[in-house]
Length: 472
Ligand SMILES: [Zn+2]
Image 1 (cartoon, rainbow, N blue to C red):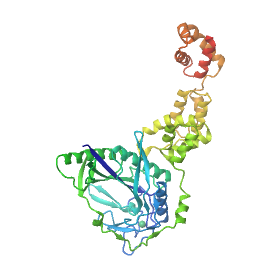
Image 2: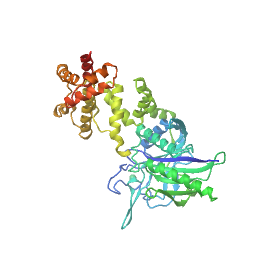
Image 3: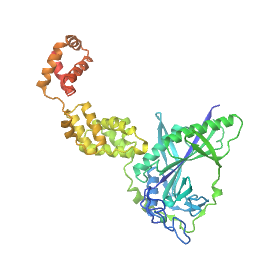
Image 4: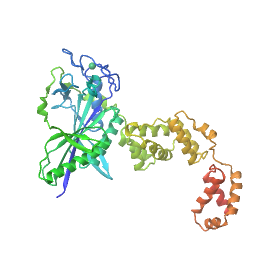
């Protein structure tokens, strides 16, 4: 019987609040080490935590966006362990009574849709960061106490591709809701993978956990490697040991880090410094009012504007793309035309970049101006692409000026074009008879000849009209 892989994911996502979760220190990536610290987040004796309301709101917003039940009563607990980046020797987290329960996300792999259930979303704080140098290890507590949500899925995924599709959907949702910047390179979103294998119909196998993966590619490769490793072990008659494993991206292998600890090893207990968190239904409803329009709703709108489902999906995959599309549309209300340019030309530029760097910095009003010139036949497609290339790198480039500077204005003068085409028609009697016989492909030949004769400036639509008129 064949093997089945079972995958569950834990995603840690830093919330983009102004200040930390339990003190007033700045929540900012990249500042000088140990400058955003205070007695609370460095665990000085007697310092007491105060919960950041904004962190609670953001966690609830995300919970509502993925259909969680928001618990009116939740409890902060201490997760006890020692590590140099954890000043208090415990992390404030939630275990028994998390803020959000249930919910889920729909993914699609190779045209097959699947619902991935969530177990919970809880609020906790991040640890500091160790910096290893040739002189020893240093610690930066700027990140210590930054609010995190941990989003825990049920083990509903059965392939590396499904796991990545889930992570992409989750990241996109976090960005839509606007509660995290999700920068993988800066570690503001990190993934832990739980993975086991079993034969169809048999109970679940022993799982291993792969910690702190920080790119989709690493997740994909690590799952493929680890599931193959487990199958190989079991087929050789060796049991799987419950443990935490480290993924080595360079070697493409996983290694034992430590045998897996259970939650009781952390001696969780309610934090006596923090009272249980009570959120009323009224408060939850007031947060629901702040939920922005999410992908499914926008997708429906775009389809009603005449876009295909596929195009609407492409545009709504990321909030940034959808926002940009709508901003261009406000200047040039041609949904299909604008969509075609974005999904072809803009996405081509974005796909050449790393995921974290895929930002559209173009000015939507200027792009609309360029597209209008193209739509009105002032420039042809080649000219539009040339101008777009310049605009992509020079954000203030004015498309109208560029048309003149680069001499890209299309030849729209019928008389001038007719003179050129009369000569071409006279010189090519064979092509003329082919076109007359109904071979429409021959038109491309005439357009090509006209472009050659006008240095690419002829308006192709006009060329076709005149050729038809001439051969009548
Ligand atoms: Zn602090």
